Structures are given as C-alpha cells and as structure tokens.
Amino acid sequence: MKLLEYEGKEIFEKYGLPLLKRIGVLKIGDSPEKLKFNGQGPWVIKAQVLAGGRGKAGGVKIAGTADTARELSQKMLGMQLVTHQTQGRALTVEEVLVEEASDIEREIYISVVLDRKEGAPVVIASAEGGMSIEELAKTRPELIIKTPVDPNCGLLDFQARELAFNLKMPKGVFCEFTELAKTLVKLFIEQDAALVEINPLAITRAGRLTVIDSKIVIDDNSLFRHKDLASKPDHEASEIEKEAKAIGINYIGLEGDIGCMVNGAGLAMATLDTVKLAGGNAANFLDVGGGATVEQITKAFQIILKDAKVRAILINIFGGIMKCDDIAAGVVEASRKVKISVPLIVRLEGTNVEKGREILAASGIKIGQADSLWEAAQKAVAAAKNQFQS
Ligand code: GDP
Ligand code: MN
Image (cartoon, rainbow, N blue to C red; front, side, top):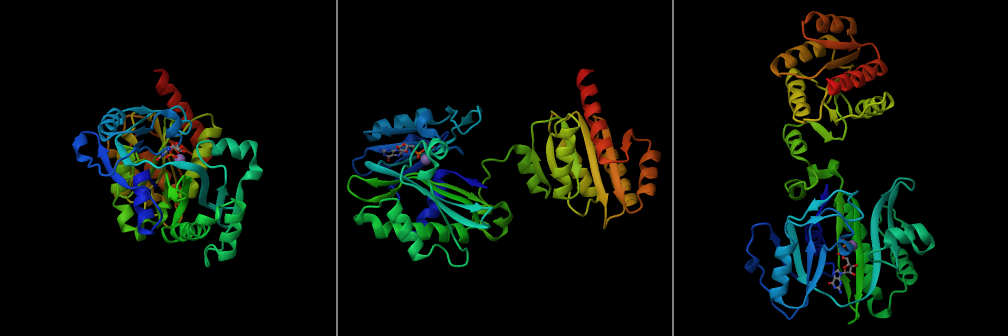
C-alpha cells in the first residue's frame, strides 16, 4: 500500500522527524478558505499523487502570499499530472498539501528499502539528493551509499555516524542526522514498510535539518496489524480491485483480455506466464484461495466479468485438498448463476480429475476443457482472438 506524501508525513510526525509546518490538505470541492495561514510564508503547494517527479512536472509550486497559495491550490486541484514516474499516464490531482516553504541549501537523499539480495533492510543515501536521483544512480553510482541493517538491532550508532561522515553532514546537524537515520530504520521495521524514503532531506540556510518529501510503501500482508493504515483508502486500487478486496478475493487488474481464475498465488503467477507464452495477455491476477467453494467461484466470475476488456475466461484449478469433482460442480453451479458472455476454458488437475471432467462435460454448459495448462492457455488465447474479430 502506497501512502500519499501527507499520509507519510503523518507517520513521520509520530516519530518526531523534523517536518515543515503544515497548513492543510485541500481536496477537490473544498473551499480554499479552509486553509488557515499563519506566519509569513512563503508557502509550498504540492500535488498529492502516488508518483515522484512532481517538481519537474508542475506539481510543486511556491507562493509568496496566502492569496497566491489559495489560488495555486485551486488551479492544481483537478490537474492531470504526467511525471517521469507515471509511465506516460496522467494522474488526476485530487488533493493538495500546503506547507510553510523552507529555504533549502542542500538536498540529501535517504531511504530504507528491503534488499532481497542482502535479505535485510538497507539504508540508501546520497549527498546529491533532490530531483535527479534516478539519473545519478545510472551515471555516478559510486555517489550512492548502501548500509545493510540487522533488523533485530536497527541501525547501529557507528553505522549512523559513518553514514553522516560519508554524506559530509555539517557539525550543526550531525547528531540530529544520526538520530533521524536510526529513527527511519525503526519506523521501517515497526510499520512493516517495504520502502521509506525522504527525498529531499534538506539542510536549510539556517542550518536546520528538514524533511521536504515523504514516500512510504507498507507491505500489504502486514495490514492486519496496522488497523489505522488498513482503514485508509487505497489510492492505487481500481474500483474492481476495491470490490474484490471487500469480498475477500485476491485480485489485481492487468492490461490484457483473458480473465484468469486460479487457486493459489503461485499457480496464478504461472498461469499469467503461460498465457503470455501462448501469445496472449491476462486481464487479471485472481487467486480464489484454497477453498474454491461455489460462493467463491461465483464471486470470482462476477469480479472478472466487471472488466469490460475480458474476451475469454481461463480457469486453472488444482484439486489438492479440494477434489476436482467438487470444484467442477462448483464451476457448473456458479456459471449457471452468473451470465457468462465469453468463452470459458477450464483446466482441472488433481484428485478425482476424471469425475470432474465428466461433470463439466455433462453440464450442458459450453466449456472448453484442457488436459494441460499449456493447452488451456492456447485455447484461451485463440478464443479471445476469435471473439475479438467477430
Ligand atoms: P517530487 O519532485 O515529486 O519528488 O517532489 P518534492 O517534494 O521532492 O519536491 C521537488 C523539489 O521541489 C524539491 O527537490 C525542492 O527542490 C523543491 N521544493 C519542495 N519543497 C520546497 C520548499 O519548501 N522550499 C523550496 N525552496 N523548494 C522546495
Ligand atoms: Mn521528492
């Protein structure tokens, strides 16, 4: 789950990180008068979208007066933002964050991310932070410092000091920085994050350390123990994904036209690969779970068919604990309940598979059966193509 900048900063605040003074968050439809300015500015207005690179795309503006800040906020709301991180797509700005701007002298990059090779969190930092960090990683990777962390101990004092020396932290903020780096790792671990990033972490002209931006990604599998986060809207999920989640189906929408219904995440991934290998593209990842009851299968059909792109449905179920005849009966019953307007291809394997196939064949429902996943994928790809042409 990706958090918006202001949501990330709310977590930073709990951990006592040095933030800019927040004026408020304005949503589409809110009156700009909701923003109560105190102090003398300038103010910074920031588009709250799940992508970086806003600075270069017009999603970060500085205003000298409260009136200009209100005006710029209004203009930014509803704007379509395309940044170098949105893969050509435009994101609608539905919320803006307004803060007291800071007078930045230096921009530092710091993040904590799970490093799969190290099998541990790693602190990544660079003295050359700011808007071109991706460029720097390509052209001058030696300027990026990586510190692996033992998750049981957090960032140790000597590691934090070494990091501060390498980043050439001035004396005035040296200790504050080492504390910040340790806190960031603590936050990463306690919040079950997959990524915590501050870019830039600024040193102001007045010599203060200030968090300018925040990016936090929480591991979805940990949301059960972060009730406060789990109840937040998932800004990344599509409408269908939200519905699927609400009824307990593990669904991720994709670009293709073959709806997939599979039991088990690993088998679902293998199914997507096989569809691709057969020359097609899956419309979704869907794991009905181990149960695969009539109820779950019915729900899964309903979810898959909500996607108007779907031109064929491929069911790939392995009857391990569940028996194939029970699954087949479930598929038949569910497909009677749900009006399936596209070709249906089923591949069953496992316990009682023969009986299962007989049930499908005798059902009178038009089902393309396949003996192997490869055959099923090829049939689904062909079916989707025929449908498309007709
Ligand atoms: P991003 O481009 O989406 O990562 O958005 P950031 O929040 O990182 O802002 C981009 C850039 O805008 C920063 O690197 C800064 O150079 C600039 N910026 C953001 N906030 C302030 C601020 O309060 N004062 C000043 N002077 N510049 C800012
Ligand atoms: Mn940034």
